[in-house]
Image (cartoon, rainbow, N blue to C red; front, side, top):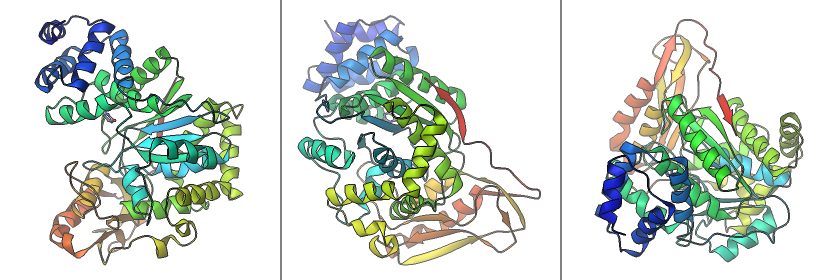
Length: 437
Ligand code: URA
C-alpha cells in the first residue's frame, strides 16, 4: 500500500477500505505516513467526505491506536456525556454528580477550552489542588469509589487523535463531519463506557452555527456509535446565548455548586437535567424521561448530588470546601468593571460568541493551545435574554486581574455589542432543539 495512491483515490471521490484506513492511521501514529500526506488526505476528506462504513473504520482504527479501557469490574452501567462545546457550558460539572448519585457511573475524559469556548478541565483546575492528570489506575479507583471521575486525555487514549487534531487545526481541516465523528468517538469509546450522550450545540457561540450542520454531525455520531455496538443518543441544544450566568473558570465552578444546591438558573438547569435524564435512560435506571428527570431533581433536593461532587473533588486532590464556601475557596479577580444598559427595554440577544471572545481577552480562555489562563477571570451576566432593563442598569460584570487590564476596553466593547435591547417583551427561545437516537 502506498499512501499517495490512497490520497489520490479519496481526492477523486473513491472509497477506502478498512485495511487501507487502518494503514493510514497506524502510519500516522508510528511515523511511516508523514504528516504532510495526512494533511493532503484530511483535505481530500473535507471535500469528498466518507461513507458510514469508512467513518466507522476510521473511528475503529483511531480508537485502537491506544488503550481501550474495560471497566467491566465496576458494577452497574457506565455512561458519559460529550459536548461539542460552548460558552458558559458547565453542564458536565453539574450532571456528572447528579447521574452518579442516581446509580450510573460517569467515567469522564474531558478537554481544555480553546478560542471562545471553555473546557471542563480548566474549570476543574480552578479548584485549589484539583488534579486532572491522573493515571488510569487512579481513574479506575476513583470511578469505583465515587461513581464519577473527571480527568484529561492521557497519552494512552486515542494517540492518533492528538496528532491528527493538531494537524487539522493547522491545515483548516477541522470542519469535516467524518473527521469530527472519528475524533470525538475514538476518545469517548476508549473510556470504558457502555453508552454515550452527546450534547451537540448550535447557534452563535457553537462550533456548528447552523442547525442543519449540527443535526448532520449528531446523525453521524449516533449511527457510527450504533455500528460499533455502543448506544449513542444526541440532544441538539441552542448556544445563541451563554448558558447560565457565568463565563470563566472559577466563576463557572461557583455557579455549578449553586446548581447542585438547587439554586441554579433555569436555562442551565434545563439543559443539565435533560442531559442527565438521558444518561439515566441509557443506563437503564429509569423507565421514562419523566421518572429520570424526577430522580435527577431528587438527587439535588436530598443533597446526594452535591455530596458526590464533594467526594470526587476530595478524591482528586481538590479542596472539598468549594462545596460549602465557593467564594472563600475559589480564586477571585482583583478588578471588576461593569457594562450598563444604554436604554430601557428587554434583552433580545446576548450573543455567546462575543461574550466568549471577551472572556478570553480577560484571560479566562486561550487563543492558542499553548496559552495559559487566569482561573479567576471571566464575565457574569447580571441580566440575560428576556430580562427587563432600565437605562443605566448593570447588564454584565467583567472580572479580571491587572496583567489583563490592557484588554479591558476591547472586552467592554465586545460585551456591550453582544447585547441587543428591544422595546417589547422577549421570550427566551427554546434551548432543546431536537433529539436523535
Ligand atoms: N472536538 C473534538 O474532540 N474533535 C473535533 O474534531 C472537533 C471537536
